[in-house]
Length: 301
Ligand code: CAA
Image 1 (cartoon, helix red, strand yellow):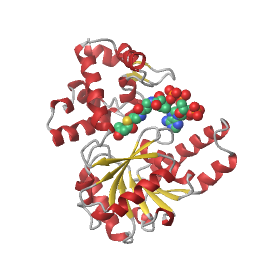
Image 2 (cartoon, rainbow, N blue to C red; image 1 turned 90 degrees about the vertical axis):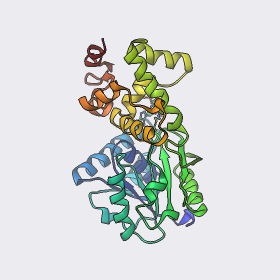
Image 3 (cartoon, protein in one colour; image 1 turned 180 degrees about the vertical axis):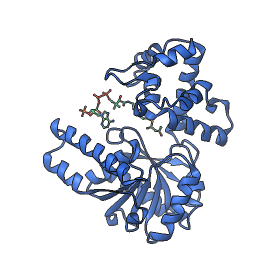
């Protein structure tokens, strides 16, 4: 399919990543249908996008007209059937292959032949997800970065059976969404997470080992390497739960100890310290200005 024929984009999941993807798709002029498990969650996701657009309009980054047009392009739904007329469906749900597989298998039956399925997976492979459908040639990866409206990159991933035509369309769609696409092979983590995840897990090991305080590890990487965020702040931003799942998947795929989940990450996951989204991770966000989470400091001392 030529990218010019894409009119309607479906987005599965309207959380941190899904909402960002829905926002840029609607802003690029596509009719965008974002699906969540309940209508309440879909409305919440769309509400977050509206708030972000209003902030952008208030700052003068977009005009009031652009904001209204983007909002008019957005619909939130709890029904998978509402995605049946989409030209492309971008999936951004939790990293659970069984769950993804069930949804792909259902959509495969109701969507027309031309619909491209693209996964925003961080660590699963495109080839294993495509196996749940009869359209492995029209299945690819489109991996965006958080915050989606700000980060310039999208990784376009070709699975074993992805056709060149599907890859080219996804690559052009990435550009139409205002991103810079790069081509990546279907190896777990693609380019960015292959390099980033061992670094983030290393930062957690440094906390466990008492190498330095949480703030100093962050300060070290910001001031020493010029990173915009320290690794522990970035972990809170990406999500402790998400990172935990990614590490488990990458360890299974590569069997290399650098992907092994540090005990502290597992404990934080079990304790519900998911990072910014839950209010607490390495930092506590409840007062507006993040402060180091005293429960973590207590636990590691
Ligand atoms: N959503 C939308 N826009 C946001 C935002 C959000 N969550 N957070 C910040 N922004 C915008 C702000 O509105 C601001 O825009 P203007 O300058 O035009 O007003 C701009 O981003 C900069 O924000 P701030 O001045 O508030 O803060 P900052 O300069 O510290 O930048 C940041 C914030 C862009 C997030 C920056 O800290 C950064 O680049 N951090 C690293 C992010 C990163 O590494 N992301 C990749 C994570 S890995 C991943 O996503 C893949 C995976 O599979 C795990």
